[in-house]
Image (cartoon, rainbow, N blue to C red; front, top):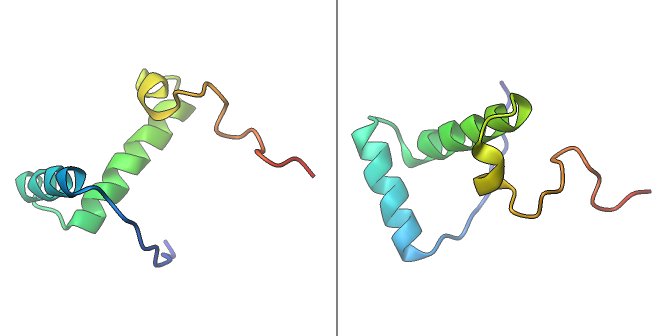
Length: 68
């Protein structure tokens, strides 16, 4: 799998939560974030209940935001 560097800004409390979660799961913060995002993506694809949390707008993930 190819990776691409991506800088992100997080509120301090969310960063602390992610750091604690990554420690509990024996992962780097990067790997923990990838695991969380992958779970959300998989949940969207499989119709799991992640949709309400990950997509409050209700717009499908494959809907182009800026149609050409």
